[in-house]
Every structure is written in C-alpha cells, then in structure tokens.
Image (cartoon, rainbow, N blue to C red; front, side):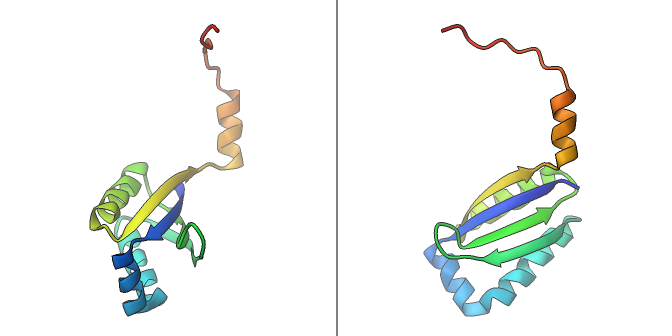
Length: 106
C-alpha cells in the first residue's frame, strides 16, 4: 500500500476542537476516516513548532489519500501537506528506468 507522510497545522477553530475532545478523540477520528477507506494509521504524533501533528498513513491508492486531503482541507480545521513516501526498492526501480530527457539550453 502507498505510504504518506502527513504534516498538519491546526487553525484556531481546529485547536479549540482538539482542546475540547483531546488527542485521543482526534486519534479515533483519524482512525475512523483512514480505515473507512481501507487504510491504516502507522503512526501519529502531536508536535509543537511549525506543525501540530505528524502522521504516517497507508492507503490502498493515491485517490483515497486525495479524497481525505480534500475533505480535511474543506473543513477549515487544518492546513495539511501530504508527501508520498517511497521505499528503497521503489527508488532502485526508478533508477533503473531509462528516461529520455534533454535539459533546456542556456
């Protein structure tokens, strides 16, 4: 299953919700959404600094990740970034593929 790194920052309204229901309540909500689309939450951490929460999630396909991303962003409670994570084997396979590319001339 494709893996994604999710980095998110709560908006003021999202932070109020977190304070109201706690981290375990948010974990349960995330689990419900991810498993409902056939995925799995590998890890979930709350942080402080630029991001408020960091997750590693497995989804059956990128479309499932996109569906969640659109829905979460539309809520206005979080600003998120989703980064696809590739395995060593996937990068080795990519490195073996021939790509015909010509850089632009200066």
